[in-house]
Length: 403
Image (cartoon, rainbow, N blue to C red; front, side, top):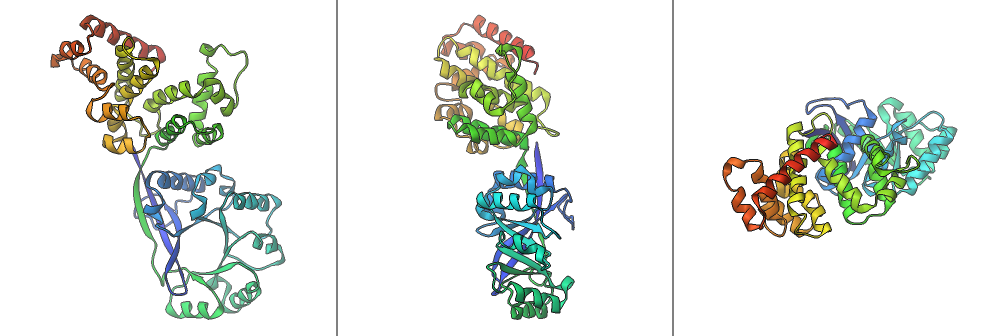
């Protein structure tokens, strides 16, 4: 259920050799010496790693320098990164296109800092220089004379200069004497690889959406969350365009779909979807089916005793009661990622509160040999025959929805 993220960090230091940032390098395994080579996958990994572990784990209070050439620069995932901590490092092209300049302006407007790497000065670079804060030079490639000339040409600009591939103390001192303010290379440190377990991206997206819907986030925020996962967007549109809604026109827009569904029904659908979300390493089908069946049974057991809003929560309690097994983490950790009402948390953690007894009865129905069904039903003043009828109805419903 967990994917591993392997991210190499290569420090960038100032003139006093204090670390000011890290260039992030993406690995396909823990001992890989080279980057993964798949820019789209790299950004996806970083978004998920930072989303689950937080920037403190990977960066502390330092900048993250991320290489973003075409087509990565156009990747919408970039906009999911914490802009205030990110420097987008663009390999300097021979002739920057109008499209590239436009995209750079858009990203700056969103709060990102930009940098140029492998820089060589020419008349064509002037428009890009106006948009970036950092410029990295490879002195080994340019040679001492060309490097000194380039530094001299940039002295009057506002850009900060980074000397790349600094491998000896002599090269460090020479770079300082030329006027560089920042430095990177094996003289300071070799890249270290950080490994982290991250929640399956599809599950992470659904959890994010559940929190947004519960907190009445703006539709545009919810729309962006859907865009993180193509499969998730497809499922929503397929669901709302189903015959059951009886709409006279097909819905093509995520924003329109959310408006048609309404937050209450969207939340319920997402709860159901969470049990079936994921790819590759998703939960075993039997576990998925048990979770959804338990949710429906818990809801049916309380339908004659609780108000509609509470009945919706009963469904959520039942499905979420197996999240610890589905996500392979303690329930306490799962709940840290969800902003749930106290009554739901009480039921999930200790089977207490208004929902706890209904959940406990549902779980017991899965193990009738325990002999506790009559006892727990009596506490809720439910006849055993009602419990049996509700259980059969829940099983039939799950088969009907095709889980």
